[in-house]
Length: 336
Ligand SMILES: C[S@@+](CC[C@H](N)C(=O)[O-])C[C@H]1O[C@@H](n2cnc3c(N)ncnc32)[C@H](O)[C@@H]1O
Image 1: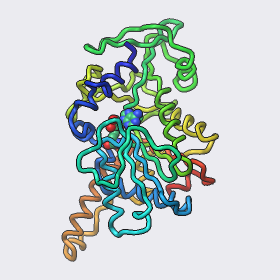
Image 2: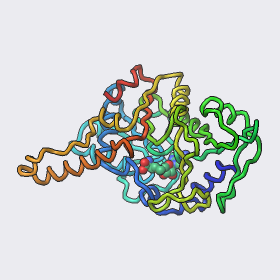
Image 3: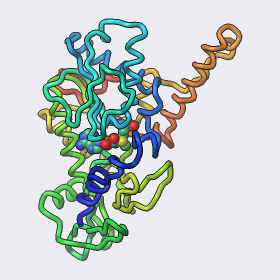
Image 4: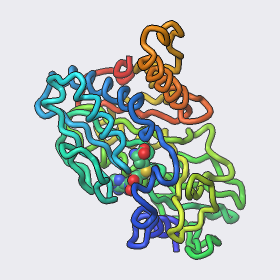
């Protein structure tokens, strides 16, 4: 079986990990930026307010979260909007998109769907979605590139048929030449998934946040990894673990731009993006502890989360791809 088919079944099939692995699956097995709650949601909301201004305050203004998992981001944004209430809260339409069932306890105004709505106006976000989009693996076998096949029960793999034209073209464009026996992860399905998501926006900004690599630092040994209960495990596609591979983020960026007529985009690390959106890990002044002990403790907790989100060796090293759609703005200016 190809890896792409094996991963699809292992994650999203009837007995797949995202169907049977606990509720909600992501938070039960690994931590993400979206799960950290308020500081990350505040940054997304700040970006949404900028987009809303650029769009001249449409009604409704959409926030669509693709691959919303446990719905933590939308839940946190919904809470932040209530305090203080304002015009954005009256106009916003919050939508989570995920094949997983609607998370229990998600606020009633948040819609939940299995495919993104089309023709939306506002902000589309996708955090740690693309690394879970199933993909194929290729191996060089002499002067041929072959698709790797895998036994879903054991994870044992062997070279199969010669690679098709589309995958060969993707590798030729986006992966450095492979030495004999070396493997590559073919990111084409992620490019297509992102391009399709971007196309659902009529006007606004699409942002994807994920771990990944660019041409110059493609992984030599591959990144396909299994996760279960907070631990790294062998990537066996038998439905017992999450399966993830780093995203070829420059390829995704090019596909997203091409999907909307060659518009520009911004690609930066999460640390940089969050700093620009006002998220810093600075500790509150100690004097606050004397005058407002509760406020001090809350600020200390927020600073600790912000430090985690901006750690260059952890979540801060994730990529932010920021893609304007139908807006005559320089992508760089969106985070300033
Ligand atoms: C690693 S989780 C990330 C969840 C959440 N965004 C976060 O950062 O915590 C990836 C999610 O993408 C979802 N997903 C996979 N394929 C999808 C698709 N085609 N459309 C929408 N969501 C999808 C999975 O079900 C899973 O909940």
